[in-house]
Length: 121
Image (cartoon, rainbow, N blue to C red):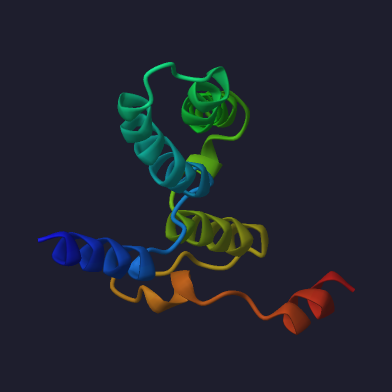
């Protein structure tokens, strides 16, 4: 049973890609806070450093979310969303026609850096 749970957790961690700016701190919460909460139950006089270690990542994640919510909401979106948005903004700046919803490859393909530099000169 334990091997099955551990194998699933390792498999899920290997497939995960960073989707937003908060994913790394959320993983830190899972890696540090959950085992810390289990350890607190078995340590009778709970040391203050352990409580800080358990609560630190959770408080950091909440503060990070609030800061990003008010300062830069786009960072809370997925990477795919950000790339598509930047591509559309770039196309609008250059006066190109927006791609049709059927041809989605134009949204995903990053612009050519050499072409961008030539266009600016």
